[in-house]
Length: 355
Image (cartoon, rainbow, N blue to C red; front, side):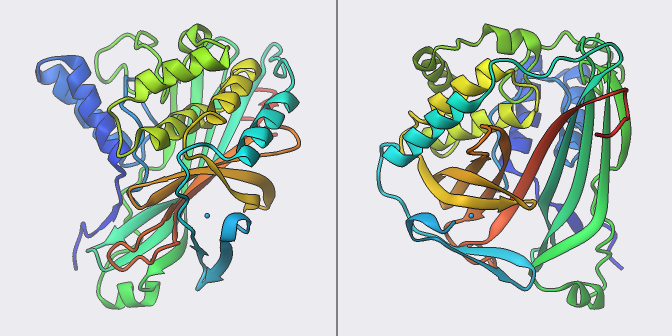
């Protein structure tokens, strides 16, 4: 029976992380190679180390507005999609994003003594078997962040075993002799200051790596301008030359930061106003359903893939994101949701406590 045919589909951004780690470390000495090995483990699903990264490349491949219809086929989300040809953000998207920014409260709920910021991510990520079978695997990720980021953080991950098959079926894969329970994603618990999970193993002092859009820390976020025009220019500069499309990359960078659950209210509002300026941005669904919660989906399409961020129109809260195929890829039909995540945050009374 094969031992290693089941693997998570690494996204291009995860490979970028590993390469960026090597590039940032200089010539490939043993320490740099150790750093890259750890980055590759992170790409396989371990918690992210706080290292400089290149932009996220999601899984290289949803929506009643603008001619899009949602359906559920064999437990897998599929949407009919319409290509948007406009190169300017739609007027509706601009108005609703600015309205969402207006609804964000000026300050976040403060952390009291002994309290932690709790961030829960419910994700469905793609796994493939020998290129013949593909499914979305359910992952539950929880992070506890202290008031002082230099104190210990806690990170937990559970791969639940729930699957949504895209190509083939569980019975077919098992009959073919594939060990589908061996996904390669690690599970467990990690603790580290600054969420710098592997600093000790790599022989580094934790909390010394600069923050990025993908791994934001307090210093990095404090230095970003709150003026939407200046922030747009900064984002455009940082994304230039990255990804298949710089406009989509701007949305991806914003999603990377929002997904952390750590962005202060004033910066969240500024980021929404920046998104309202991104060429090609469209409202792809007025009432997108993400884990039972309804929000407005804003997306940019490029290179056969659409990336959406979903925002609560009433509170302005970032809810999550998703990615779909606009073009068929191998046996995966156009309009298939190939990844989606929902993010919730809360203040809890102690590390490991639940809301």
